[in-house]
Length: 67
Image 1: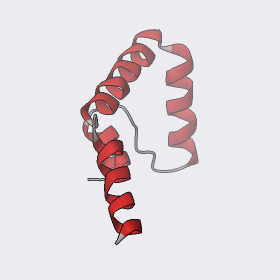
Image 2: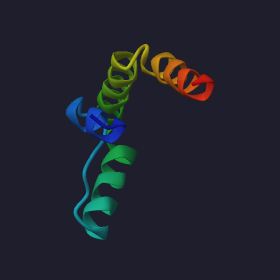
Image 3: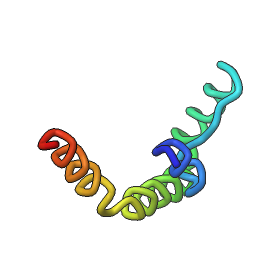
Image 4: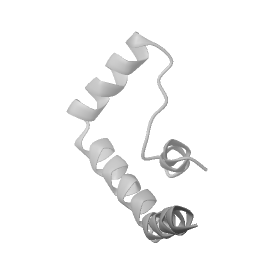
Protein backbone atom coordinates (compact mmCIF):
# COMPACT_ATOMS: atom_id res chain seq x y z
CA UNK A 1 0.00 0.00 0.00
CA UNK A 2 1.36 3.45 -0.88
CA UNK A 3 1.62 6.32 1.56
CA UNK A 4 -1.27 8.11 -0.14
CA UNK A 5 -3.44 4.99 0.09
CA UNK A 6 -2.61 4.70 3.78
CA UNK A 7 -3.59 8.33 4.37
CA UNK A 8 -6.82 7.91 2.43
CA UNK A 9 -7.66 4.71 4.32
CA UNK A 10 -7.08 6.51 7.65
CA UNK A 11 -9.14 9.51 6.48
CA UNK A 12 -6.06 11.71 6.73
CA UNK A 13 -6.05 12.65 3.06
CA UNK A 14 -8.78 13.76 0.76
CA UNK A 15 -9.40 12.94 -2.87
CA UNK A 16 -10.37 15.90 -5.02
CA UNK A 17 -12.18 15.57 -8.33
CA UNK A 18 -11.48 18.99 -9.84
CA UNK A 19 -10.48 22.57 -9.07
CA UNK A 20 -13.88 23.40 -7.56
CA UNK A 21 -13.72 20.38 -5.27
CA UNK A 22 -10.18 21.37 -4.23
CA UNK A 23 -11.34 24.91 -3.43
CA UNK A 24 -14.27 23.56 -1.41
CA UNK A 25 -12.05 21.28 0.65
CA UNK A 26 -9.47 24.01 1.27
CA UNK A 27 -12.26 26.28 2.53
CA UNK A 28 -13.48 23.43 4.75
CA UNK A 29 -10.03 23.08 6.31
CA UNK A 30 -9.85 26.83 6.87
CA UNK A 31 -13.32 27.26 8.32
CA UNK A 32 -14.01 24.03 10.23
CA UNK A 33 -11.63 23.69 13.17
CA UNK A 34 -13.08 20.32 14.21
CA UNK A 35 -12.62 18.92 10.71
CA UNK A 36 -9.01 20.17 10.70
CA UNK A 37 -8.31 18.63 14.11
CA UNK A 38 -9.87 15.28 13.19
CA UNK A 39 -7.96 15.11 9.93
CA UNK A 40 -4.72 15.97 11.74
CA UNK A 41 -5.35 13.19 14.27
CA UNK A 42 -6.02 10.77 11.43
CA UNK A 43 -2.75 11.74 9.73
CA UNK A 44 -0.87 11.14 12.98
CA UNK A 45 -2.47 7.68 13.29
CA UNK A 46 -1.47 6.88 9.71
CA UNK A 47 2.13 7.95 10.32
CA UNK A 48 2.32 5.95 13.55
CA UNK A 49 0.89 2.89 11.78
CA UNK A 50 3.92 2.96 9.49
CA UNK A 51 6.30 2.69 12.45
CA UNK A 52 9.30 0.66 11.40
CA UNK A 53 8.70 1.01 7.67
CA UNK A 54 11.54 3.50 7.22
CA UNK A 55 14.09 1.47 9.18
CA UNK A 56 13.06 -1.66 7.26
CA UNK A 57 13.50 0.16 3.93
CA UNK A 58 16.91 1.53 4.93
CA UNK A 59 18.00 -1.94 6.01
CA UNK A 60 16.95 -3.40 2.65
CA UNK A 61 18.75 -0.63 0.74
CA UNK A 62 21.95 -1.25 2.72
CA UNK A 63 21.69 -4.99 2.07
CA UNK A 64 21.32 -4.39 -1.67
CA UNK A 65 24.23 -1.92 -1.74
CA UNK A 66 26.47 -4.42 0.01
CA UNK A 67 25.45 -7.32 -2.27
